[in-house]
Length: 154
Ligand SMILES: [Zn+2]
Image (cartoon, rainbow, N blue to C red; front, side):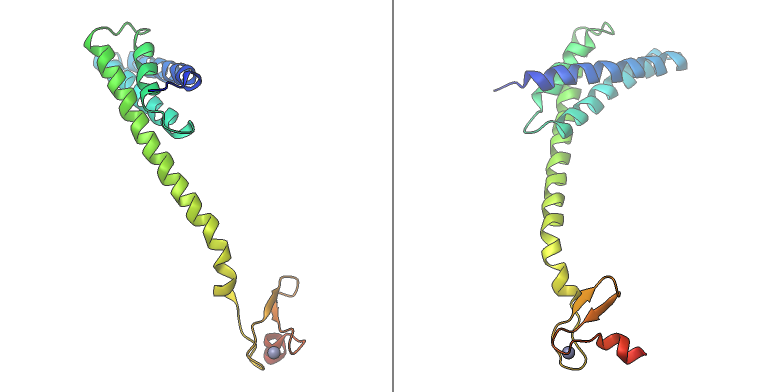
């Protein structure tokens, strides 16, 4: 398995910042349980961000980044394993999200070629396809050399 150290580094920073925000919110609520919940959630959220933003497959990196980040609030033992799993789960969700976005982008790129055919109107006089002229906001027929729709309505 190849580890992308650049994204591991970025992930560690992102996740530590998120976990710090979580710890602050937890401290405001005064509940240690809320603090830990938010910290673990931040590992998951950080994993999603890394998985989504990084090119290619990055699932293990957010896990390692979360495990490193978990050392700072003093999480130990099983907590490190949970942190790792939260990061990996986030990374997996982020990857799936990235794939869905790539597919949607491919569909959008394909559609403009379809649109002109769907919008094409045909000349009421000769039946040939007309060309839309944006300046006149009307369809021009090159065959009849006129704007049939404007002349019909006038
Ligand atoms: Zn015509």
